[in-house]
Image (cartoon, rainbow, N blue to C red; front, side, top):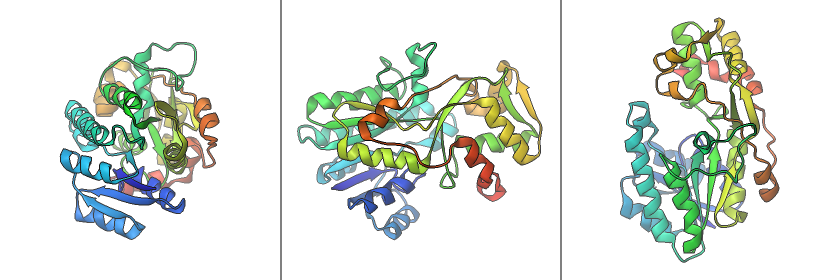
Length: 306
């Protein structure tokens, strides 16, 4: 299968591209810079030059492919406070790709997040693949992709947990938490820290994308989740111990100032099941869980965390 991949040189893409190539698929990766193009060439992929704002180019690349995996997102916009702009750009890119694929039965995988389930009103149990939210930022894109199943696209959405971890991760939420602890001199959690965050190793997540590309039924919501829910205090304690700083409770009203754009999420209780995904795709995570990966130490290399 010839697969067009956006975000192909990013964190998740750096694992998805080799996963696809090793399984015998061809990859055409979206690259917006010479550096990204060089990375993709070195990996053995073809290159399509462009970015998420080149809607015509996205449509053309999607139409020429046998399937599409959409990983790109303007994370840099989110970090400077333009989350709305990043969300709008993502939806426009997805719509351009979807329009090019309608009626051909080709697979189209897009990416969402388990934190979106915070709007589903779930209580007393982990969120599942069957849970959905009517609308909202990034949710609208997820629902659009699922709806493409009614328009001749074998569409599916992979929900990623807030922490996708490995030594391939250089800018994700785990690095931000480490940087905050280093900068403030303490690893923080909100309240008693019992709220839970799910997680997955990057290589396990990449395997989900490949299996879904090959086999997921149209309209699927999938969870690339290995750790169903790690107590946030446990995460903070490992970070504190590895940095040699104390672990402290932070009042909820101070979370925004301490954790910047993550302030609205650090107290979220987001336990998430992946049992339906495991059964549907015959997927089983095989790489270290979050706490074990943090213990390995690569997140605490100052050069990578800066």
